[in-house]
Image 1 (cartoon, rainbow, N blue to C red):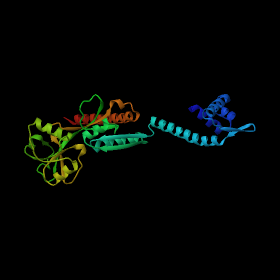
Image 2: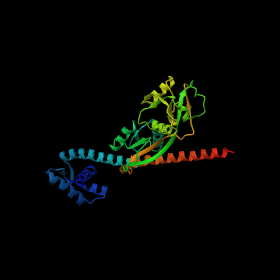
Image 3: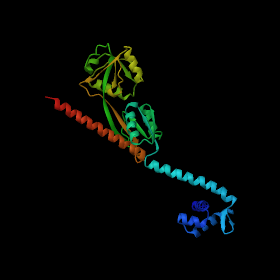
Image 4: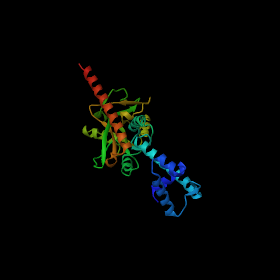
Length: 306
């Protein structure tokens, strides 16, 4: 049985005869007759019976027509789905990220551009996010730090300064900035090992040979905040991820460049996927917008200098 034989039968049955089908679908009547005849011969069935000068569907033909109606309806649905997916009117994009801040603004921009695409987000640590990417459980990863890997396409997205935060009654609370060397022996609450914010902060401390006193290590950003509020020590955070609180004060670091970064990462072999390509285009556009705003701010600050 060939697809064209089923299609010919379906067209003849719907048109009400061979001549009508030939005119409707611009196919020669002998071709239709040959296709339907080959289908009948292959399976030893009679799909049409003669009623005078007309040929009408047999019982077998009527049952087969019900099947081909479902078959070609689903074919049309599949073609419509593929067409919409090609044009990004439908589909799905899954993202794994180490934190919600950057991925949320990316998804908001992507959803505005492609509202028909379903979005799924998973938050995990760096190892989990990379595992999701490598095993195809996600399409895109958003990471703070990434090692060189020939399998990966990495797009730098944004960077944010790391700042200290203290309880409102701490002696540093009224300061406009603080130098890292002032943190010598200061009780410090830190994130877990593997935290990219912790790595950036400790690298900066090492450059100044400063050693705070580690009093607690906590693997939750929210739990670190609570520990600081309770007066157990001070801590640090990316300015982009600091949630204002009447009990806390955020203090910039003076005289040292301490930053966290966000990178968008995909598998190079999947870069050509239309939905992934569309997401990367949105991300690159956002990065250009941020870079342009930063240039304007730098120029404005320079213009104010005497």
